[in-house]
Length: 581
Image (cartoon, rainbow, N blue to C red; front, side, top):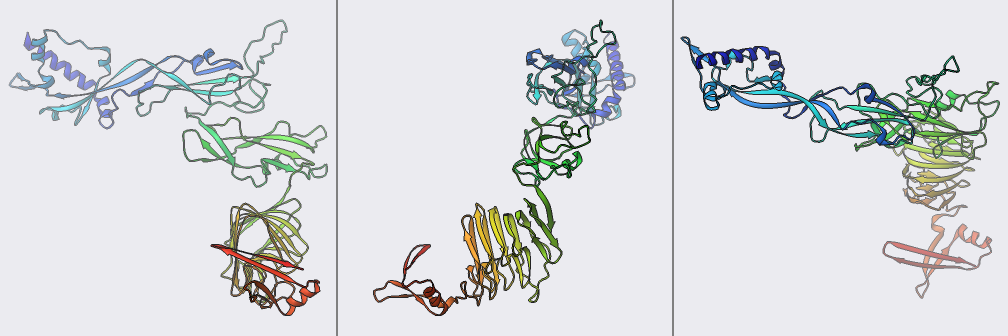
């Protein structure tokens, strides 16, 4: 009787090995983690896709407490197969000692339902010719049953707000095997209750929603209010939630608005014209990640911005344009821009020039021009923003001095230096920023700025009869070339009117050029030479002025008879007070 049992066991082992060869081949290179989830049973369509009216609470949704899942079970064992010599069976150790197991237990083993899914893997698994000496094999089985889950909504579910909410199963401590995807439930909260009309007014509506005719892929009924709601991303992709964002290219905006004050009946802006002036990208902060992502705006929409019965586009008023983002991203609310037409109390963008690393935006009647080798010219009075680092070419020499940025005679500009760095110190007679005689520049500093000029030019050149006012909370480092002032006149030129009301300003002259004032060889305004004003000590030690030449003549022309001077200093600071009577 024992002999028959041994033969039966050998036959059963051979059958199991032969039927599991395909599974063995797969498991040979990729054994799953014990207890990991292999797959989930598909949710019923009525659960996976739900549409509910506004006002539905979370408890009113169908969110099952359990889902059906197939789980891997992985064990290892040592196998010593039967060896038959001369018609007699010889087996010992491990799983081969079936006779000993029979004798001890007295019971035959019974297969469970999970045994049908058993596969064997390991070194040379499935090849009985290499198992004569015994080896360790990996046994992979699966079982299917219910596991408890919670549901996480992205974005956070709000039954009072229309939109699409994607719920993803949270399986707790389970891990997912390669290829396993978490179950998802898509809930659409609809603000619309429209139903299909029927041809017979006495019949009840069918209750089936009409597709939206305005936006392809909209999941809401036709005629719904508010923005269209599109289906969730394909391929079960997880939605990324945007927690904050900023526009990347917003140079046409003023505090988030697009002002088009010049729009009128003869100068209309159609929809495409407006969109071309709106940003094309956002920098988005994604929930659960550290680094922001740059996302393209796929389209802009504004249902109210359209032509009237006479084919005229809107001329006045405020219109909200809403951005659409790529599939796979959720942002609530979506980015918007308010477009102001006609008479808005904001600046209108005239033109933008960007060359040699420097970008200049002209607003409020300003106009900027650029010529290769000659730099930028702020042609008309207005508002300008200058940013970037200069890497262009300026062809200057002693007979034809040039400047990267020039404010011409008779022009008054309001300029914001926003991280502008211009260094032309390697080119003689080249200036970083020049205000011509008769010109005025009101400069606001934002960020860190630097203006460095070549020999015989001031860093920020302000000659006699020109005026510059500096303010803001940024910084400016202005350095003149050889014989040029930091801020003021170039070689042989007096400085103009320079007023500093704010910001951190460092001005450095070179080769007898002063920090702020005149270039080398010039007077201190009005033809006063540097050596015509001095300080001397009276017998008692008090400081006093010593004026000669033109300085003394001008003091007399002012009607002054006396000039008093007080000097004081401490570590790192000095001060002077002058009183003229």
